[in-house]
Image 1 (cartoon, helix red, strand yellow):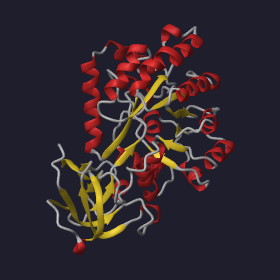
Image 2: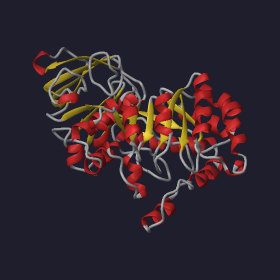
Image 3: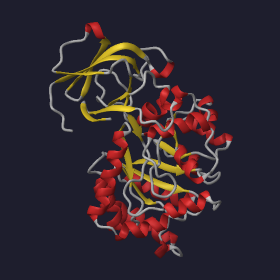
Length: 395
C-alpha cells in the first residue's frame, strides 16, 4: 500500500518493544501502555497515550504488543523451481551435502527475468505479511556473469540489501577448474555484479570454496567497495568464521560447528553470528548452540535462510520459535536477534529499533506480548505491518 502522507498515531499499545535502553525488559526496552507517532515514514514520538499529539490517522492496537519489523539478514529469493523431492529424501534419511544447489542453478539459468521476478516478489510479499520489513537477498543460483548480474538487478527491485554470492558452489562446467572459476568470480563476474550489490559472500565449506579461494574472493569484493559476509561452519568445523572476523565481516552465517577459538574470535569482534535454524530443521542437522555464543558475549542474529533446498521458509516467527525451543535462547533474546540483531548483521541503525528518528517499520501482534511468538508456534500472530510508516496488510 503506498504511503498516504501526513501523520499516523498507533495508540493503545499494551507492550512496545523498542530495543533501546529506555524501558524495562533488558535489551528489548519494553514500554507499556504507550502510543507511537509516525511522520514522514519515521518514528516521531513515543509516550503515554494521554499525552499523544494530534494525528491525521490512527491505528488502535487494542492493547496488543507492537514490535520493530523483523530484519531477515540472510535469504536466497532469486531462483527457479523447487527441491521438494530432495526434502522428502532427507526426511527419509538421506544426508544433506549441499550438492542440490546445482539443481537450482540449472533451473535458474533456464528461467526468464519475469519468472525470476515473480518468485522474488511472491516470497518478498510472503515475508512482509509475516512481519519482515527489511530483507537481504543473495544471488548465487546463476553462476555465470550474466545470470549473477541479472539476479542482483532483480533483487535490487525489492531491497537495498543485496549480496553477490557468485561463490556459492563451483558450477559443473568448472568442476575440474576451480581456480579458473575463482578468477571469473573475482574478475568479470564481480565487475558485472557490483553495481547491483551492497555485499559479497562466499560459501566457505567443504564441497564449496576453501579458505584460500574464499580470502581471494572476499578481498576482491572489498576492493570493489562491497561489505563482507561469509557462509561458515555449517557442515563441519572450518576456517570460515575466523577468516570472516579477520576481514571485518559484518556477519558470519550458520555457525553450526564452532571451536572455542571461533567463539573467542567472534566475542572479541564486531562480527555478528547469524544463526539459521530453518536450515537445521529442514536438513535434520544439529542446531547451533546459541546459548554458548550468547554467554560468551557474541552478538547473535536470526534469519530465515529462505531458499528452495535447505530452508524453504520465509517466516521469522517460525525461526524465533525454533531458536527458543532448539537453541536455548530466551524469547527476549530470540526477538532481539530477529530484529536488532539482524540490523547489526546488516550494519543498520535505522531499523530493528523503535525510537524517534528510526524508520517506522513495525508489527502489531494479535497477542499481548512478544512471548507469544515462541509460546504459540505456527499461529499467524501478525495482525498488521507498517513499512516506512505505511500500513501493508491486515489479517
